[in-house]
Image (tube, rainbow, N blue to C red):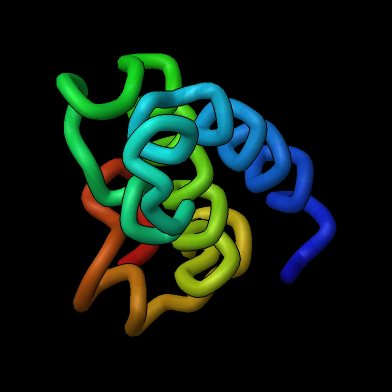
Length: 83
C-alpha cells in the first residue's frame, strides 16, 4: 500500500471497528466497508470514499500535472487545457 493513503486506511479500519457491522454482526472489515449508511456511520462512508479517491489518484495521476496527454484526452481531463 502506498504511504500516502495508509493513514486514511487506518482511519477507515478504526471507524469500521466501532460499527455494529463489525462489533455486533461480527462481519469482516472488507464486507462492512461496502455497506451503506444504515449499517455503518456516514463518517465511515466518507472515509471510504476519500480512501478510494486517494487510491484512484495513484493509478490515474492528474494529467494536468503529469502531462499524460492521451490519457487526459481519453479519460480524465476536461478541466485543464492539455490537448
